[in-house]
Image 1 (tube, helix red, strand yellow):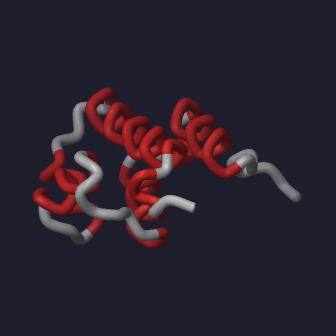
Image 2 (cartoon, one colour):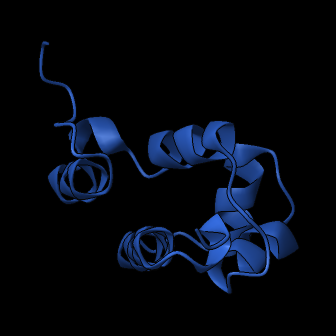
Length: 88
């Protein structure tokens, strides 16, 4: 098994998160401030130089307004295989 940072599913997720950040017109610096990271950390994640941990992933989803963001909900569903927000 390859390292997660090189896994195609991980790379697709990070690319989708970056695209969503851009679509929402949120800068790397703004996202970093909301998540408690430096802008360079967000840049490194988006360039696959730094792995995103699960807590940072959760904070990024909140910063990108997943609760009201159907596109982002679908990205998470595709990555996890679990529908966002559905009762189980």
